[in-house]
Image (cartoon, rainbow, N blue to C red; front, side, top):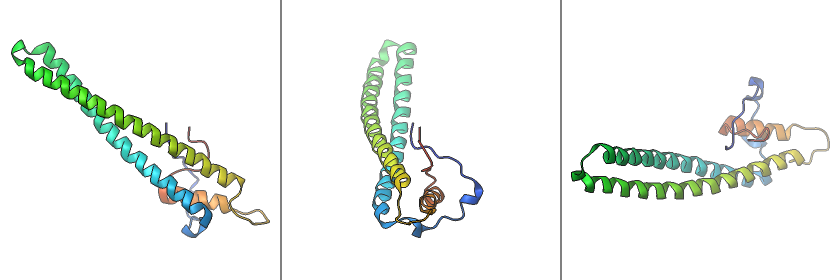
Length: 148
């Protein structure tokens, strides 16, 4: 789960401009991207800890199965390292889930702002569409619908 990226038609990519984001949306957009970057960093840390957990788990199981009782100290050190890395992985996983929820809420808040209307033009305009194109072009994050 996460904020998914969706493909846009090629003709929609070249019209995006940084001046198209209204001032009252920039704060929300900046907060969204700050949290989105934080989520990406946490997911990388989560993947690193997961690989460490798998490595220590595999090494501790194989040392239990194949080595003699002379290496009991080595096996217990590997089991202890496995428990510590598993604990740290679960902490990072919990933080990652919390930040994902924040990103998901901010994403829906941005979608709501874009659907309700983000400008005060009397006639039909393309302001919301231009903001969506700008976000897609610059950050490769889609605001075109539900990320699920």
